Length: 354
Image 1 (cartoon, helix red, strand yellow):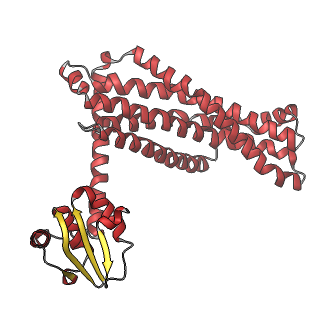
Image 2: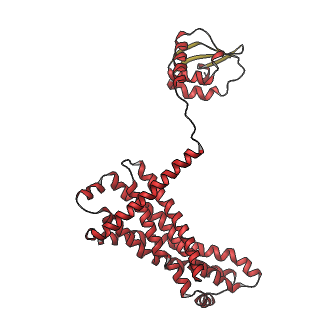
Image 3: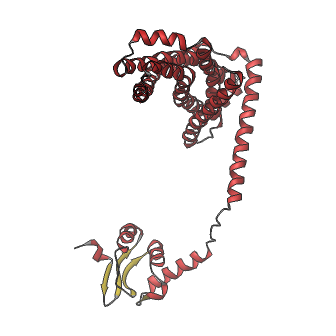
């Protein structure tokens, strides 16, 4: 027997509701209600069991005027549900101005917290420098620097390949094969190398910083450090800032070399520019100024990523789901900040004619 017939039956344009309209059956009944058509009245006399969930389903699904049949128990439950539903105040939709005000208030609080975090960190870096742990600093260089070499190398190599491959057809058409060297080398050294490294480090390091410090916050280890008179800023923030300050330029140099190598392979295969020709021209077009303009971005990106990641960790509240929210926020904010700072660097370089 089809389970649907245990709850419905349409006869002479009347829908007979049957069986137990209780919470255990609500999901099945609700699903099959959608397929019922061709009735003008709803008879409740055959319902033998009902609770408030079933009563609420009847009120939501059928017009009260269409209900018929004699069933005192069902009528009392439906009446109870209708009385309580009428007492529930409707939720007012927030106006656009109110939503914007809430968003603005949240952003202002974010900036105030970050400035407060910067102030406390700076004071503790100076006054409690003895809390700095060289072991944590060395471990962070290993994790965030050496550990990132693999993914930085693969992505930089692929970016070099893609740039050269996409440009090769146009350059070959105009007989300007050798200019692939200028295009690949300068774009990677000045812009793409630093940007790729910064985005990868944002994804790895900022999220890791926010998660590890956030977990310490949930487990009240930060409060314990404060109680012991140890500065959590000097102990947890300073090693991470210094490690990324040192590691970022090195990763950028590595990304530049691997990315250019990827471009060299495509240039050799498609444009017949061999490695010797590529390197000879690259040594002339990539000036020291261009090379340093990309490297200089590294320490700035590193400091920003470390500050955002650690500050989001300190924002975590005493509940585990808060960690996930702030880990995501750390990655989004650090990537946004990096792109904005890179744009600012472009304007400054243009202004300085670099």
